[in-house]
Length: 84
Image 1: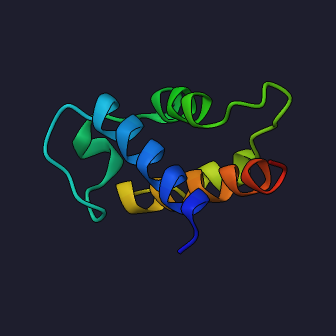
Image 2: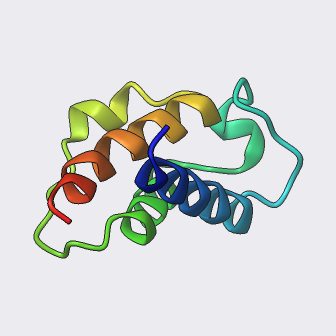
Image 3: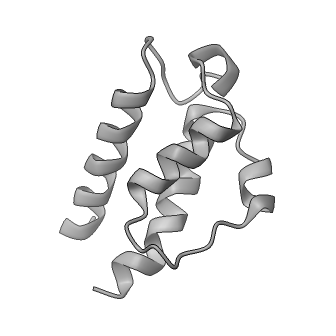
């Protein structure tokens, strides 16, 4: 794993821990940890620093668990990380 991936993973974990106020793992359903579509978009806004970056709603529709959310956020960050 390259250092940029480690940094991105750490940032994503930090954002998730700040926004999920209960114990969770990657299999935890979003509803069970208190996340809904607006909170997921707010989390995405914290992770994605490019204000011109668009979020594909079809990708968001497939996010059901914390693990799905983590993967989706990593995919959203990937183009941004590659641009650095």
